[in-house]
Length: 390
Image 1 (cartoon, rainbow, N blue to C red):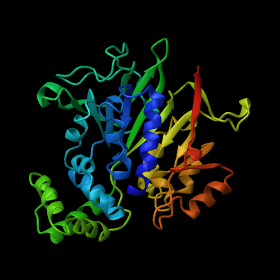
Image 2 (image 1 turned 180 degrees about the vertical axis):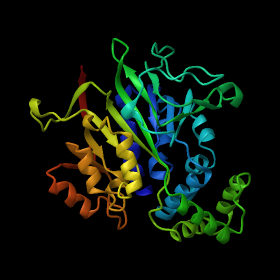
Image 3 (image 1 turned 90 degrees about the horizontal axis):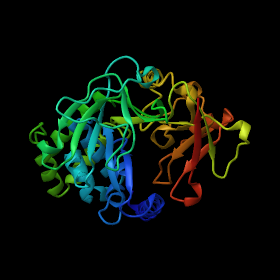
Image 4 (image 1 turned 60 degrees about the vertical axis):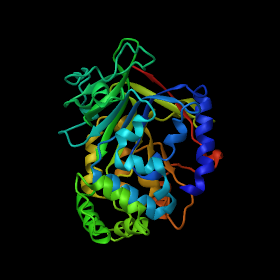
């Protein structure tokens, strides 16, 4: 949001400094979805000469309409977003928008590739895509991190660096895979395991119907880029986007990436906060699970997320609540199933939004769980470190 631009820049500058200063390497950048408040820090973070150099960008594979809904929602929350060149570029073409910052590859996570996810991962490395090189390499090399892609499903090249003419490869991988960082014996040690919540398809159709009626444009697969550009040039175009979004609901869910970051199955791990609030014998599990903007209160979505991560849930010590702790996304039964030692909400005061919602705070507190609310105030920062062993 515009009002927090100063705090955002301050935190990005501090992070760049922590990594070693401008030009330092960032191995992987995850973007959970296309809302402006989740992507508008990218230009500052990856700015040439002042930011870091990223090797791999990971995001969910989002249909055009999903990105358009996210853009309209962002404009409804903060009209200044309509003038944000990067957010507009990302909405039109995320590959082109991210290619400008020179990553080696962009990985799009494809959802719904079959039963089970990281909970039942085969640790055998996945085959490289036909006509492309391995997504990651255990040997690292050329400044890359040591990692391998494990799991099930197919790896699809959307565009090779040579084909795109930019040197940046765009690759689609299933959410039944994971990025595995190896131990000294090359066995998987730490997993970055995704899950894609596909959002609400019915709401997507209603939104597009409203937008066509308000703008008088076709918004087809071939015209929608021009339609968006022309709409934003029109006087009142941003208002039409906002009205189309608000006509179908203020909390229309879009495709969102959830992520487990923690020890591989079968390993033990422990985490501690700095400064530590746990004695050494009471350290919680080391894994993090971030729910993105998933609507966990909807049974089909919440149950699928639990099923997807079922074998990794015992490793989860920290759970990042969905959608800034919104009551529309929270479900106490899913919190009980995950059973974390700590909950985290990334939220700050904005308009009359209830982030986190009072009923969410009540549910977490009644279970004796701590909730860490991370805001633009640097005193709210959360740092966790962990250990993993067999």
